[in-house]
Length: 289
Image 1 (spheres, rainbow, N blue to C red):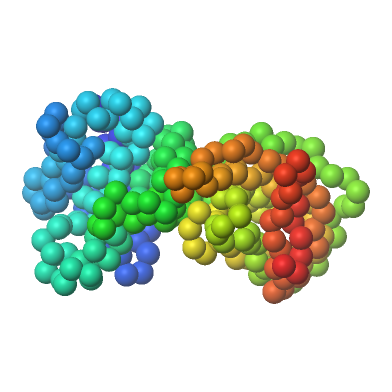
Image 2 (image 1 turned 180 degrees about the vertical axis):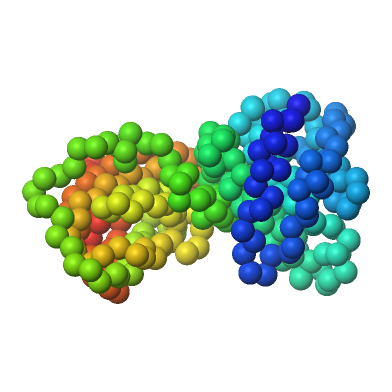
């Protein structure tokens, strides 16, 4: 069912491991994974790591019901557990509170692996996972899993820079011409942020381009900001695109459309800019909030 996925995942087992993450399994461990369908499995899929015979059990009916994109993401997620040699036994030795924290951390590690593995060859699978978890908002499957908002934010944070969303509004060649870029040679670091997701605030997945720099961040988890580095101080045109979400009466996040904006921005070291949007208007970056 997922031989092409095996090839993709095996090709990224050299994925840079962040400090504190477990040592990855070798490439041949990924390539030797057996995928076994079990139609009575209550979960979508479960990974069992073994140095010689790693296995992923999956429920084919449930996978078919969620569609090919989400199915691809969740299978890549299970390969992430194999990649990081996650075993349940090592977590169960801790007290119940620490055990749940450890298991939640492992779920986020596997989400990060899946996002990085699929970002280029199967970006729709990553986008489907972000939408899926964003709709869950503050809810979780159980105490062993992070909230939907935490998982959506983690996935977005793990996308490589070369895998920016292919959105025409951000890739269009035409730019504001009110002012030509004026830069100097000094490099700066500045912050983009949006309000945390609290009562009365909309959920926001933000994609931006400032001069040659592109990136993403979100308030569906913490932090709701991004530090932009390696841009020369000066004046640039920018473009912003924001996917909006609202909380319904059941505290579920629901998509409510996409808004865009563009303008001129002067950046200097230590500056902070907030993403602002008023219903019926465009998105702007405002300094000093």
